[in-house]
Length: 462
Image (spheres, helix red, strand yellow):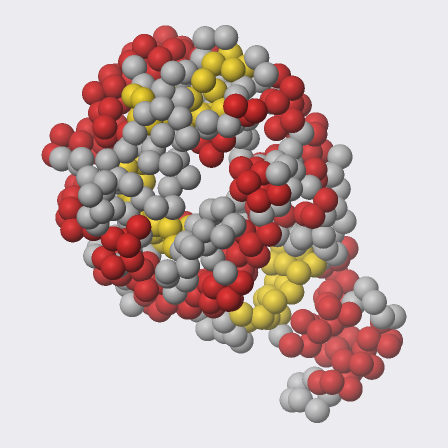
């Protein structure tokens, strides 16, 4: 499968199954599009008819172009057949029941009342609760016991707002450190916070122990304060921005990123990204809202077209800022074209329900945070382990080749089938797809590929 697109002044050709990307001239671009549809001589005549009047384009040049295309095909860099379908189930079967990451819901409560929050004020449609140290310790023991030969383990402190249970977070980190040596493990911690409770102690501890910190900010004050409010309806922007700036400055280059959500109120989300950059934040992410049909925050069809244009604008602005020595990183444009995810990851996806699970304050296991509170998706608990083995097998069988809608999609080996939770909430099945999300993902990948092409070629479109 080959995908071709024109963006940023480049003619780009992606060979889907090999991952090869080619930046070509107009002759080669059209030749590749028709290469497997027309006999060589007929194709050469058609190209000569289209381009023959241009300087340097004659029968000899066209013949050389077609020879190059054939050489790339022979080398497995164009028109590469898809040989991965039979591997999809096999790869996940090989991993067995190994768990490598947990999302610890240390607080099912929150000091904000964000209108679009899928967790319903931090409660996940249930009771407000804080995780005890005992439950958290058992979760870490469960992770160690089920991690097999893996050395590196990941734990996300999540909520609600995890800083509302800060002592338990600190105690769990301390406990995990005592277990690393005896078990031959290394823990990597991430903290996600809305920022309201950040103080000097939080900053010092997070910058010492957290490999990554995710900071929730939606952008401009008027946009952020529209939906991210406290229970009195007051916006949180003025309280959290100085605290975020202080934390990031103190991190001294360690990983963090600003995580925003854009809605129907701001499909022109680049204004919010650039606002965050101007505040001094250079590690950025903005996610489209996912909400129930009819929700006023939801993106409309008209919004989607605006958003796709915004992704292009963002890529162009990122190049300008890089040339000016003021680079920013956008999470969705982080694309490694030389190495990148292994084929196992490309086929199998995020590992929710198998390698990765969420833990509620009372120790229940769910495939990920977006399934928490939906009883059908309860896998078990941290004492008994996974008892709903049929559900685990359902997730194990969920891969990019298990979704019929993905079969002809050129981006399938970048999204790995997409988010199972979004698919379920949009279609009623974890093997479905979230159509609007797919549409935006494809545009993001085109922009990310164009960015890499521009960097490789010096930033000038041809």
